[in-house]
Image 1 (cartoon, rainbow, N blue to C red):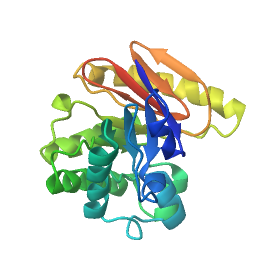
Image 2: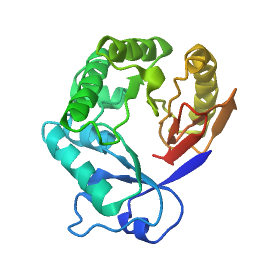
Image 3: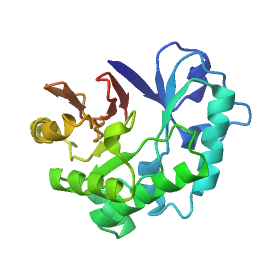
Length: 231
């Protein structure tokens, strides 16, 4: 199991030997990029982008974002994967965009396909978005309908939303995501494995090899090893 430490300090890439998770929103300001001494993954900063602007229209275009990821891969090095410019499905984000879960899923899948069409050699991963098991099934079906076989993808992201703003809610969320893991086992047997992302709690629940960390983004690859990153 590999954990990626989330940080807003990109210069750590050149100083540490632990895997890191760094956002494009912090890296994009650097004229001279650090040369990585550790493995790392790049987040698109989608939650901040949508919570502040309600749209990706005022952010980087897919072509601009792909160019940045290419630069990070070539100049920083040791890039494991990069998140797409996805649309998460927390209630607060839905309220900000004015769209529904289905539209967020459609935009997420469309962006992944557009990024792949720009440069298929860049390590973008598909991400499942939703608020319920049925949502995740629909999102997976949407990828399949558009020609993406998630069962053969090296890594698939799963963005899970939960309200854990208080300790009591944190406890309930842990139970909730344990139940999510149980319900997802039929999909996991197809070698679909996902990260979980939800706000602010250190609680972790494990069930049958699926680890859902509340307060982190976690990725499990088809080989069964895992990457977990703080939000």
